[in-house]
Image (cartoon, rainbow, N blue to C red; front, side, top):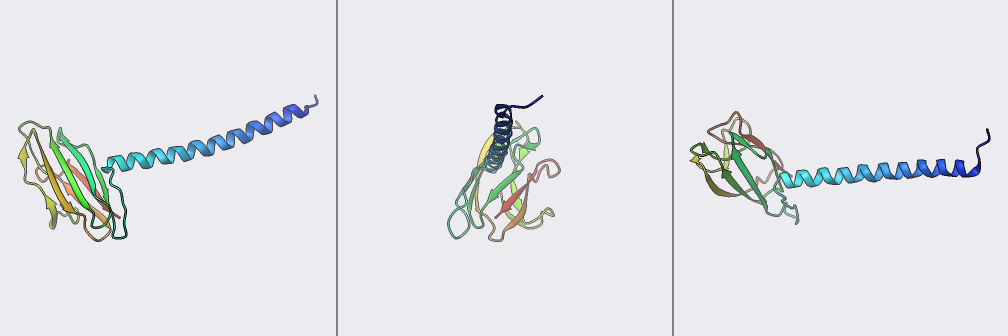
Length: 149
């Protein structure tokens, strides 16, 4: 059986269309993943020569867990954390430390019973790296990482 020129051209066109679509889908999936990380981190934008712009993040404390485990900010950026304690009658706070040993505190709130919403404002550390945050009342289950770029 002899293949005609239309079949050969159609096959080539199908392969090219598949390759272009695969590249476009991969690129789109990378954009979606980056947007998801940015939204989880509070949507802060990094800008300016000195590090980053302000970062605002809303963290819900419920069922002895934080709903977010990561926050990103530029070095020295102003960070605003809104802690929404939704556990009625349960003490929660949020405290940021230089590392998991939790011996040197960067900033934090006092433990308070929910339901309650409170705000914490502080500058991100000037040194890039990973920092630790937790609820001091529930340090085994309510933890996260502040990444400073």
